[in-house]
Length: 596
Image 1 (tube, rainbow, N blue to C red):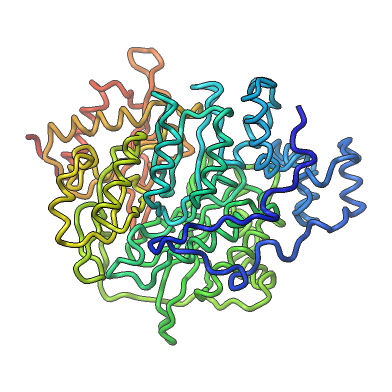
Image 2 (cartoon, helix red, strand yellow):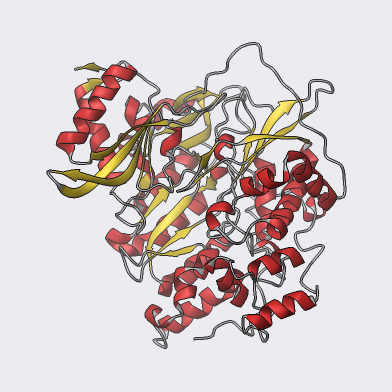
């Protein structure tokens, strides 16, 4: 089935901007941050070498208006056409993922009219390319139903957006739920392609988007959930977070020139020493510092943090100091360099770290500076006299604005219902400024609560399940989706994690600050390696029979001087009579818990 061949490419006319309500920050005007569509490579002719490579593959008639080759450079084109290019690159040569931004609308109309079904569609479109529209087919667990991942820069949502998200999943019954992700983002569950296009368009109407939320794209831009209200931050980074997102997504409509990256890329901006967005496990981390000579507040660069099946890496010093006005142009130039020079053979070696290691930090910095058209300074050395323990965001805390407070509430394992969205919207409007922030620990923060409203706010029914003063393990619990919906996960995580934590808290007096992360497979979406106690799904045996099991990691730390956990034990069966005593012993012997 051929769709969208005559459609214009989304993103070249209408622009989507965030709502103009005073509590939602708007992006810097495009003229100030470098227009997303400038320096187009789209008209670059195919070289004779590229034409020969296409002919060798029988693709000499490839439609360049559709192909993922259109906007990438000569080196990248040749890499994508190599014999050893990975299968995703071959798929993108034939048809770019950006085509799904319009085709998802055509598909929805055809399905509603009874002219096709999801089973009739090209499998590469359904199972791969639709991810560029944020749609992930859950074919193994719920065939025909999709998860939709959003773009929520800074994790900041307003009441209108919250109610839209609740309404979007309400019709799907038991299949309709949502999760807060470890990138301060939202994933909606339960939809079919008959509804997906309406949600896709509806998101844009409320200032959100799902374009380029999956596959080889920049994932949600993470910052601090208390930026703008934090007494200890060096600057409010939210406007920069929105501006990076707007540059990359062309204001939510899609930026075709940056769609075909070699692999996904994570960007985080940290305005305080807490490092709430975990720059140490991002491909690109901007760490706010005050220049020791000039006093200017800018960013030291960290690069290379990521998790995968084959390698887990903490970011390292990118030896670059970036001014605030350089952040968005730097990101654009970095994406162009990564797009045109990153590896396109082995997807396990295609993340940004591999390019930086191959080139070295100096060459990498110089390549981006050349693309930007201005020099980049080397990183600055900053020291502090005393440690800065990472703060707990949950509970009630004074803001830097006099008389105002933020209230952090625990969302067990990040799972919520349609009614939860509406309850959050009501609370945000009734007691605060109509907004909330999502955290990378899958919890929520309500900002700008006047002191005289705190007592009444505590009494709201939603805080019986989303506790403000949650027990120690619950407040630090993080979990990936698990096998309930994810076909890659080896074990069920969310429901099991909540049950295990509840029983541990009932049996032990647990000291504060212990973080437990569950992840269903070595891809580590649940980030087991950053936890005090991390559990990763793996095969195990009980009485000689194969059962669900976990590898246990200990000793991860976050904030300043962050470090990854080390494997402590593997192949522990998930059966409660085995796993629960193991975790109890660990909490007592290594973390100071005591029996009740």
